[in-house]
Image (cartoon, rainbow, N blue to C red; front, side):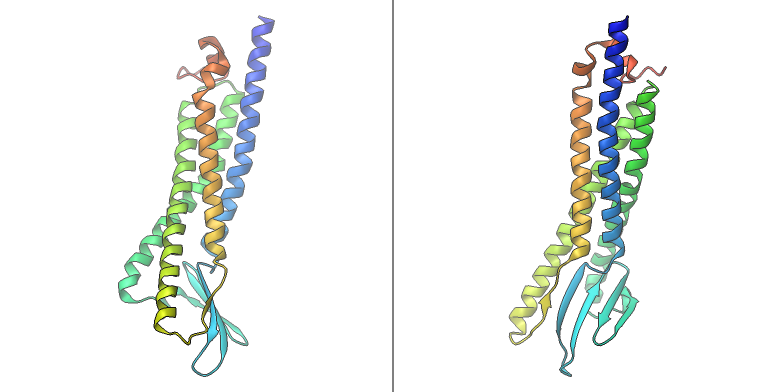
Length: 221
């Protein structure tokens, strides 16, 4: 009995440590994705206007910032670079990014509940799958929207350069996409670790008794 109890304690400690690490990863991912979502760095460029005024522009999902000697901030709908044909696509990207961020916010919360139930030796089936769904949902959606917007931005810029050969417009660092993409990649990593943990849980517990003791079966205690 003492051996079995010690084994169960070690298993609980092992699972708790893994989940605490995943909580930290998903918390960082959520912060990165929220920062990318809220900042105007989805399209950044500099250039010189027809009046020979150097300017820089930063456009986000919700607002834009235009700077010459001073900076002005305005609602994104006033951005003249978006044509009516592009508006529907832009709104779709905005919706995908919003869902990704919502999922990302829930990731560390769900994992905290997961940790608590493991430590209390309760059934963790629903928490395990909720954690997997939240992390893969947030990660994949974030990477999809980042990839699509980055592709569209660079295609539009290449076409502009070919059309306006004497233009001095230059793309800047698309930092909002970078933040969102890093957050999405971290959540995908968390999903992989969760899958590996669940895949090998029976091997770690070594039997139904051990599984029940660390809350790995469908029978709630």
